[in-house]
Length: 111
Length: 116
Image (cartoon, rainbow over all chains, first blue to last red; front, side, top):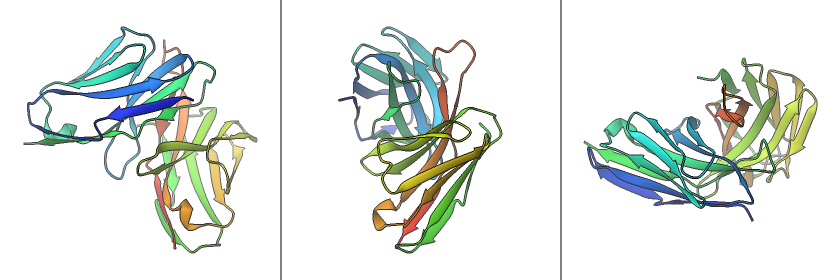
């Protein structure tokens, strides 16, 4: 069964304290892995798509990496405005529309 | 922001009443989706559409129906709302970024539905 697990469920960081969020997945062939950011009361906002093991994408203080079984979202020197829930989703190779989402990691960055 | 609006943004209704949520897009994308988001479950697909009058079921479709009579509008109907359908509902559309190998889904702002 296709499955996505994100850890930790919640993470508290001090401003400037770098860390990583984990997304482990089980899927019968990976078409793509997606990262989204979601602020309270809003819809998910697209961040990155990764397609193959070894691929990396960066945007400001965020860097996403991908292996054959998991993805990491590295946050370097976070700021309070990075506080949000980060969602990971995988798209199986046999579907061009289906996304399987994890439950997310709630990140709080304190000043 | 992708041009997606949802209406209403908040709704409180009673068990047994019909409810229709609307999703409107200005991007002319072919695919549209309805998800629900509940604590501990993540986002789960209810129904999706791959064109006008072309729809299919997702993983949690029981108790929901959809219609798409125009490219820009995708309606989600709860025929007889139940308390288990209290949730936040998100519409999404998908389109291809230049050079990408697959479509990216873009989400609307959500509708918070409470069924009493």
